[in-house]
Image (cartoon, rainbow, N blue to C red; front, side):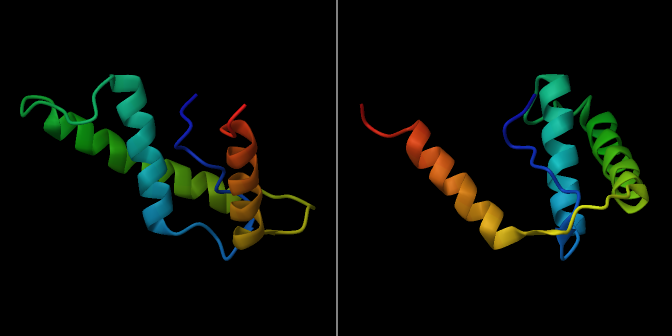
Length: 90
């Protein structure tokens, strides 16, 4: 799907409203094919982002898991290592 949308479930502390909004914005951008809507579509675009963020927050609150919460700093370091390996000079 979209590389900029990251997993938000099972982190301690929980995902912030800004993180949920950013994921919703990326989702709407991806499915609409537009990073910035025209004036004619701006209201629909904004409404879609707000509704998806709202529903996503409910989803994150309702999900359950028996796995221990992930550490944001550890996961960020793993992502940096994967990126360095992926884009390393051959």
